[in-house]
Structure formats: structure tokens, C-alpha cells
Length: 195
Image 1: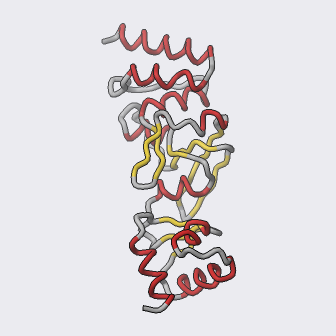
Image 2: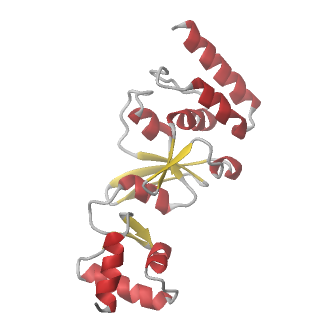
Image 3: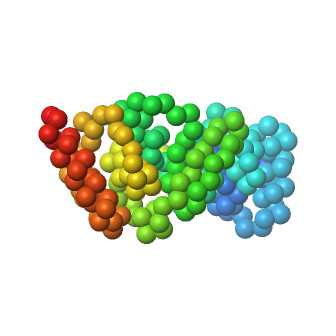
């Protein structure tokens, strides 16, 4: 097996669907940037690698959009309306993918909109309430709710019944925010009163 076949085989075996330049360097165990650039260029030209955006590639066009979302800016994780919508906590449909990050930016990449929202580093890097599913960092519904309240001061939630309130109160201290603490207590009390 020659070097080109080995490179493709190692990519196909990888669980990831999206790769950064750094990922490819680790997979191929090469530190020479020129070697990796040439290899990437050859694979793209041969249709064995798909270029999503500068420095980010996929096995093909059927890559995982959540995986891409967490590779555009790192550290980051999928959160906010994306998670809340999937959990049935909000009923509004959003086509863009919402991501917690170290900066605020809206971008469109490969016809998909991504909305990055800034969260303080001390919160962003705290792993409580963040799950790692197949290489994708994604907030639990409880963490996504708290992230949303942290970023948006006023927000309406359609259905709070799927939430684990014990988990919410376990995660809440990482935000270190008295106003947010009061807001969560009030939301919880209203929820309990309406049960």
C-alpha cells in the first residue's frame, strides 16, 4: 500500500466526518505543513476529500453539520435554540445552528447558517452539562436553557416539562450571576405553580 492509499484508508477509518488541517496532521502523523497541503490538494482534486471552507475538510458532502459547527471556532459547543428545539422546549423552528463560542459571529458555510454566541471563557470551557457525542460537543437541554438565559435577558420557553430541574440548579453556579439565579428561581416557581 503506497502513502496515498494509506492516507485515504486512515481518513475513511476515522469516526469524524469533518477534519481541520490539524486533525489531518494528527491522523497522518505528519508535521510538515507543505506535505499535508499537497496531500489535501491531491485528495480534493481526486474527489476523495471535500473542501468546506479554508482549513476545514470532509470525507464527502454528507458530513455532520453539528460537527462542522464545533470545528469552525474552537472551543465551542452546539447549544441555545438548536438544542432547545430538538428537546421540545421551544416550538419555533430555526434553520441555523446555534453555537456557544468565544466570539459572536453569524456565518454561512456551504449553504448552512451558523450563529455563534459569545460566552465567557470560564463558562465556555466548563464541561458540566456538555455531552460529547461522536466527537461533537453539545449542551444538554438544561445547559442550553441556562446558556440562552445567560445570553438573552428575556426569553419565552414553550414547554419546560422535559427539563431536569435538579440538573439546572447543579449547573447554575458556573454562571456566577445573581440576576440569573433569581430569574431561574422565578421560572421554576412559575413552572411548579402551573403543574
